[in-house]
Image (tube, rainbow, N blue to C red; front, side, top):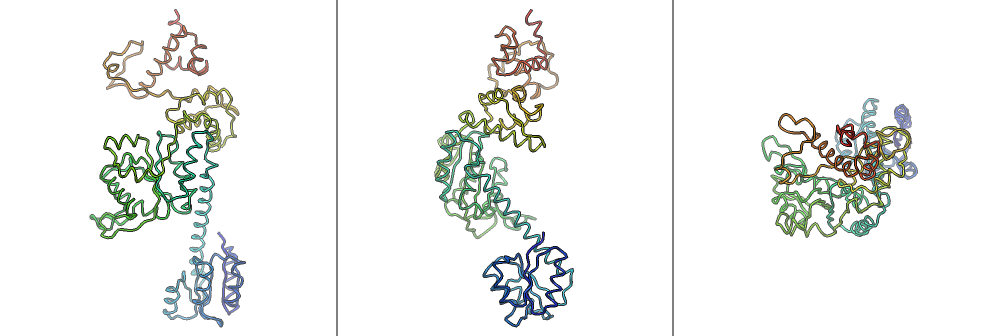
Length: 471
């Protein structure tokens, strides 16, 4: 990446030599014979870095560097000096110079330092671009959904983001709680700070304290010092997903962090102050957990300043077409396909599903439907064939009963695997529906909300002898 560089030296030969060397690397160089000239043109050029001589008629390079840093405190400045006196180099570095070079300038040394600065600038620019993309992506108006239920979520969220208070997000698995947490972060004054996610249920209890609060060096043999997630989120937001699964001992320590706004690394004798906004989420009935003494009441009150309940997809029918179209575009794009249309009958079928797995389940169905569909549209057969019938828990009384003889060979080994169980469950549903409809496949298809082609496919796959049954 080429960067904009101002150079300052009262020796015009040095200026030309540096300019020619840097131009070979496609950098944009702006030479100046005095510090005053460089300062006058600073705002016009908006340089990424500066290379200045140590000794100049109108002041030292260190003095000029301080003036440059008044305009841009992060500007990397390289000091040039003809002196071999190490004290000049030490003075420059102490005053804030990025590096120094002695004259005559060696091209390899110059390139090495400038390239390192350019790499850092490119990384900062990429981070800035990504943050801007995230800010746009998680703006309220860009979060997919316009149902009344979701509008209620945004009404609370709009108030919450204006404060520093904690937010508790509840809702079933797959409803998009993390999306709401990210929207809260990127629409707040902390948007430029980090967003750090911790999945409380996925970290072993023995490691959770170190993961959250950090650990000091040599707390145990061979243990390296490392910051915890709270320190990493300083100035931003920490998202504690599945907070309802947090062990009781950790709940006590988290409560102290919320009260004191400081963390203690394991093995540390001095707490560290932090500025972190906490957003927690859970799919359990947290109020019931408090009543059952499984979750601390005082911690619940600390977290529950703003409570946002994300409704299940079944209560957000109006959002299903928008979400389906979004996922179609996403997976068509990922697979290098033109964007497909969803046929009206297929969309109607999607809207009427109960979606126990919520948005995550809908996304999985659309991903598969995009892959199996032929042509430029997704029809009802594509979505029905992609929809998996969920397994149902078996009651104790049903489990004690011997299985019905359904004409299939008995399972071998130590029992049926999950695929066998799903197939058996699906087979019984289909058999019951066929019997109710006197083995008419078209009527059975209508009852189950799938196509005749799907019925034919499932009958064949599951080994159901329709002709024998009709007889």
